[in-house]
Image (cartoon, rainbow, N blue to C red):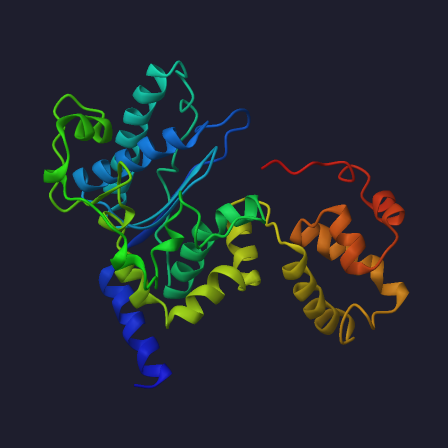
Length: 313
């Protein structure tokens, strides 16, 4: 089967399986949703239980310290109901920990449009998986424990040990469900006191929607332009590390200035490159100085309001 036939089959699968939605929340302006991994673990269990209850098919997710991302399949009304109930359950849990009101401002846009194409779906799945890496460049998005990135094309996944609900004690079930009636669906598998993500994430469908494992990794780690477009579409500022920004700068040098790269770029164009890197790609002043090969003092004079900005984890 050639590449054209594979792409045609994946396009057909996209059309027949949808609609798909990217449900996301604005980051909290102050404070965090999750203070530690214990709270994240509870959230993961509540996500699994609530998604099953509302018949929501999750394709990808990321639990960030101050916001959520979910790619879901099915009716938007079901997705919104899922998030509303998840928020209620998580709010009750955080209230018992003395953190009432943390989620009051956390909302999903009720007018979220469906994802319009297979390419956009791939981009948005990659964007969600990449999110932890955007916040902290030392994080591996394909191994981050509170993101679905480790599920896809993972040959070790079947060998990870899990338990069936019937193997758990009553106390263990209560810890997972946070309910006095701790019933767990038999389809769930439990690992380290948490419902295993492969029990509630439709990762096999995601694998069918990407050409292969290599292309999937490229989409997540190397498709910088798509990441930039998705971030802009969602009203977020794209963040690239030095390697990604350097590769982007080489393309800009060729397309905008007709030079092979930053090394060959004449001095008179370097400030123009700096402006593009700053305004379009949200590069820090330090990155601009390194990539455009400019004196840091010149860059700070060009962008004085951002020269002392500190990136929050």
